[in-house]
Image (cartoon, rainbow, N blue to C red; front, side, top):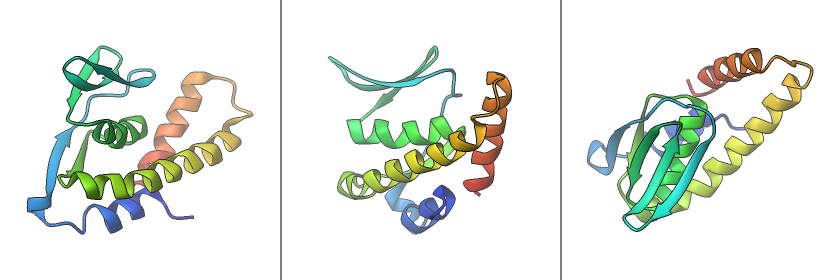
Length: 125
């Protein structure tokens, strides 16, 4: 199985600087939600609210907030973003399932979260 870090390098970091936008991400604070309102798409993590230009952008950034990254490169080309998004989400879901299978015997939620964060930092390298 491909790691998220490998996917990111192969699909995102191969793009030129002109095709990418650096995005500062808020801290993960509980569940991360995507909300559509009158003004567009928002990504909500605790009390942090981040404006997004599309649902796909919000979904892309949500993956990286949930992983715990502070900064990520975002493809500017919306069609390209849509093309890679489903694979990224599937990879994240599969990774979550594997991590959770190992954490089933850990009952302390703070320890679970700490281990989860440590594992994600390793696999996004």
